[in-house]
Image 1 (cartoon, rainbow, N blue to C red):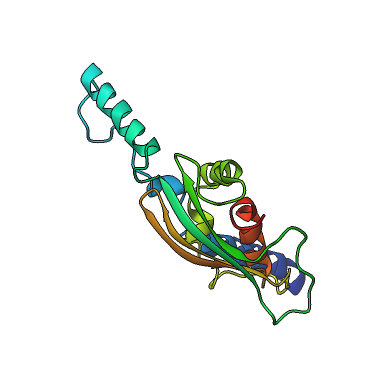
Image 2: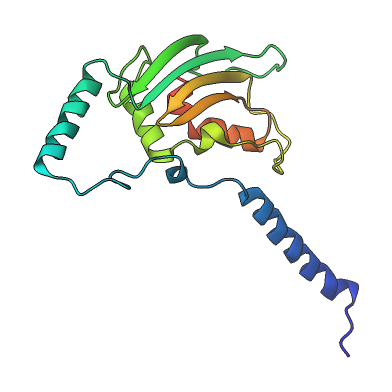
Length: 177
């Protein structure tokens, strides 16, 4: 019979707790492609006529139709923290559209490229049940509303803990300039 001492049992328990923590952290954070429709899914095979129809639809999108991304970004600085504001961060409100890139965002092409790369996850992520480091990264805040593809967005960004600092950093080109 094998007996465990404190020295042999502790690493096993810590490893199990770490694995459980990773599992809990990953739960509910599905990849963004779940929200995005698959082109051609459930549709009949494309014919030359269908391709022409799609080209017409794309032309409508660039002529003022609904954009794939439409966001309103409101940035502010909280008065609670005595931390300096990040250089280049400005308070204000602006709009961002993608496909086609536009709005009054200072760099819509870079912001749209970031959204294409990261998807909706940072905009839909709920960090309230995550284990996060207790730190404050700054007084910058942003409120983002609108939609990315078919996903409705209404979220807040701040720098009040390690998870939120990372989340803010992921979308910095979208919310800060």
